[in-house]
Image (tube, rainbow, N blue to C red):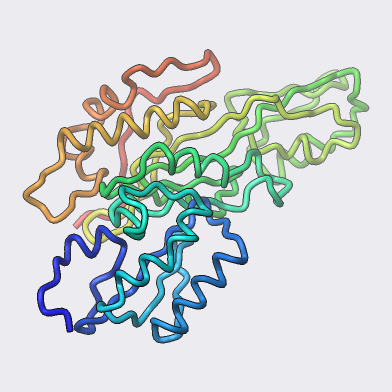
Length: 320
């Protein structure tokens, strides 16, 4: 029986400290929320043979294999290795199990793999972010959603990445049926209106939802080939000050979003209060001020002309 356990090391190996002595649960990360059947079979095997037969699907699209004896952790690290290999999870040492319990699994809605409203492949972008930030034990939450419907609840995360489509209008294809105008008014923000039998788009009101593209019978509306995103930042749950993320960038590109996330990790490493067990990135921004965060976040970032950068961001929410 284990008598001396390094709980910090155990948690960084993605094993949970539970309320039952000498019993743990393994956290299995699934980047982007997409998993293959063979990996599910491996999870099932571990749960049946080493756990209590139960698997908890987490809010972050991972698994927790429950009821594991702490004596079996090293053996389970070997058994879980095929999943880590198949999903190309970054590891410090092969065979050491999952690294980092700090940065949470990068979650994503199903995206344009299935959903007609999805503007991009959310799982693919999530894996790019995964490759950029792991292994890392900073307390950061990232979520990706394919469109402004925000099925993943991206605004409750430190970084919420919301897909946007830049609609391109070919007037010669338009038959003035009004379908796009009606759908934009009823399902979105009313960014379209008809004028002299043609459709006028108000870019300042357009949220890139793509409803005009989906509902045009003649393909007069198409999506621009370049992918764009809205980046909402520093949303959170928790005890002291739960709040929704606010927009930092609108019509941003993928490369610059990854740069900003990496710059934020450097900012956190510089300012984090190491006397605390953990300090949430949003509270560091509150402590240093948004302007200091922005100075770090935008280092080396050059935007396209279309990108809107909110120069000052403030948050509300319940405060205790």
